[in-house]
Amino acid sequence: MQLKSQVEWALHCCSILAGLPPEGYLATRALAELHGVPKEYLSKALQALSNAGLITGTLGPSGGYRLARPTSDITFLDVVEAVEGSASTFVCTGIRDNNPCATRADIDDCDRGPCAIARVMWQADKAWRDSLRSVRLSDLRDSLERDIPADLWRRTGEWVLARA
Amino acid sequence: MQLKSQVEWALHCCSILAGLPPEGYLATRALAELHGVPKEYLSKALQALSNAGLITGTLGPSGGYRLARPTSDITFLDVVEAVEGSASTFVCTGIRDNNPCATRADIDDCDRGPCAIARVMWQADKAWRDSLRSVRLSDLRDSLERDIPADLWRRTGEWVLARA
DNA sequence: TCTAATACGGATATCCACTATCCTTATGGA
DNA sequence: TCCATAAGGATAGTGGATATCCGTATTAGA
Ligand code: SF4
Ligand code: SF4
Image (cartoon, rainbow over all chains, first blue to last red; front, side, top):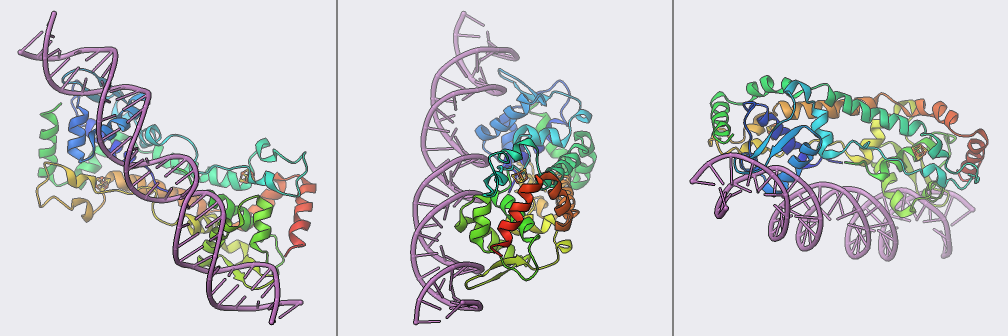
């Protein structure tokens, strides 16, 4: 079980957009070039973010994307679910209904309510999502600045600004 | 992102094996029939559990599987990781190294240490695993008995016992 | 007005992990 | 000896993720 690579791309793109001046737009071309990923495919991830209302796109030359909300109002969970979906990682196929001992009346028992196994798995899924929800895009910036060498950070900022 | 169906199978099988008398073995055939899943494929999941040291298999007629440890010593995480692996759900492909602003010296920067994005994702992954680790197989039985109609529970118990 | 750059989305092809089946071998009980 | 079983290698089939291409609508700028 692995998250889509688009999740990583989306998070990196959001972290870049978070550093943009509020009136600027950054094109898919620039984001793709910056991260070394195929532009057409990255476009799908950005469209997903757009459909989720996290970023806003504008057409025409000098078009592109910007964040649709303040960075303090966008969580990691928002980004992850925008591209990965909000369905639980554990899906139960009603395996209990296949019990040869079950009578007709017992069938669809799983439909009536999940059992303890499903509840535990869903609770773990919830713990994962709660953890993602607890971190906002605004928490990221300071932490990221400490990770990246200062001069690279500065040069990247100028590179992005020149294209915004 | 979805867990393998084998995870569900493995958990259900463990919950059945947990109700077995300690000296009994239950064959793959019975577990497959009980859950309505292909025997050959379920076998792979049971082998994974066996390799992880959670269950023990015995050859020959009246062979099969039993739990290798007391139910209080087997967590949901043990079962999930046995079949799903213990690799993080978030894999980072070193996307930062593709930054066109990065000099040769900056490359492999991701290798030197994960950035804030990876840390957040891995922390969420850890929260998921911690949640799974907090529930033991022994916690399951009472809860499961409450979920399932009493007579179906009894009939299933007899069905399994007749084959153990 | 015209042109070019862009977002958007449908269609399609490719790749790969999961799913599923088949077969052989080794082991142990009757 | 004979048979049922676990164990595991080999091999398809399936579906979602990955990736590319193209057509359309929109808008900035010449
Ligand atoms: S509800 Fe419980 S018993 Fe039924 S299929 Fe889901 S996990 Fe299995
Ligand atoms: S370490 Fe951070 S910057 Fe580097 S690839 Fe992973 S998530 Fe991206």
